[in-house]
Image (cartoon, rainbow, N blue to C red; front, top):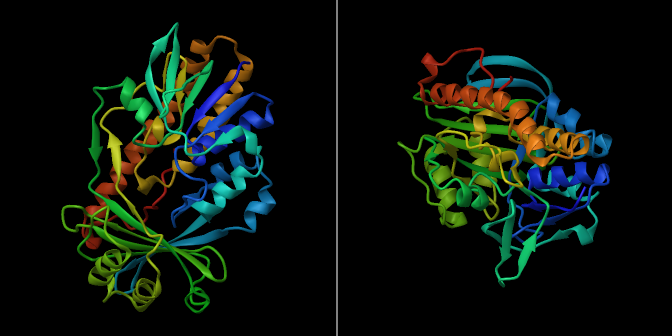
Length: 361
């Protein structure tokens, strides 16, 4: 196979690179950000995601860098337990650590940072990509893994409708051994009794905690360019009188690397390919965070697309099979995510008692 250009070196792009590297398919990764541009948030990986990761990394090494979650415990914001549910091989890891693990197998000469690529058109069925200095890149296959607001996808499907979801998040990591010692290896989620406001706590290590808040954008407002101090004030204003565990995490956290996650979804999925471009992960199918399936879906996309590229020399047939195999499952996750969003907005008294903040197909 001829050379593959991967646009975007987040989790989905690095996953694809690992599968290509493993199968001796030539490729190069292009990332517009710097190598150390890693914000403080993380991922939940259900069992299936771990299985796909084990194909391309040292899984025992991964296990030393995150934590398995035993139970999902749902609380009211004051700390009263609403429900408990056992979890089956659900793993939590920070984003920066997962990217570090996925980067290990990628030779340095196969990834370029600070390289923004724009799609300028097509010639003979191939995408014409241009760097900011106007030099051009042509590749036989282009994998667009440039995120939920994919520039490449929007350049092709100009009539797509990208909707803001009625939920945004602040995600952060705190390193505090004293607070971490109070937390068991469970997925703890506190929900305000009136609905539309939650605080999640996941222990990454004996000293490190991943936390996030989800909020109804009709009730709560935060600005993407807010300073760390303004983000902290938002958290104190809205969580300062919650259960003492939540309050202590909010007060003791540094907000320098806190990530404000603006959540969007496509009103209707586009095709997962166009000419010699295939879309991967969030670039193909943005999933709202309630699914906890973003990483697993990207890994599965990468695995299946690589297998199809190995099996078939007809690129269009390969891409069509890729979409046929992946789209039905993605549509299930989208449906489940919207159901979980509706539940999140309800008062606690009206929420189902046995639901999990994870979408299963």
